[in-house]
Length: 128
Image (cartoon, rainbow, N blue to C red):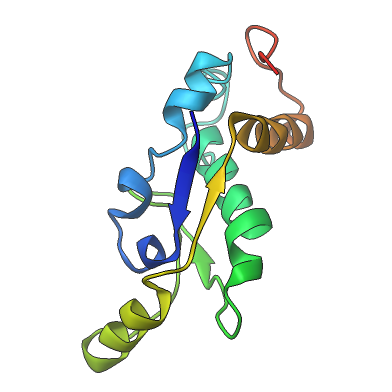
């Protein structure tokens, strides 16, 4: 099932379905319990995959914008800095039509790379 990453979600802590936009694809393909052996304060696997998907697939479309920070939170882990008010309204307008559609394969390719970087493996082989 394709997943759409919208640039405007970078402005909100609840963006990217509160950070859970990739969960169905990851869980359906064996990447659901990747944090079971991780330290309590470790950056969650799903959040790391979302951040990397944004870096690889959405960020190149954001001419003149920079993904400003990643945060370990229960909400969206990747955001753009803004000071609110007029700046936020301007950013929302500039970003409202910028989006990218990812296939399951796109997401799972990133998930495999993040898992390899962490030295972990999915519970079942991904269905590519």
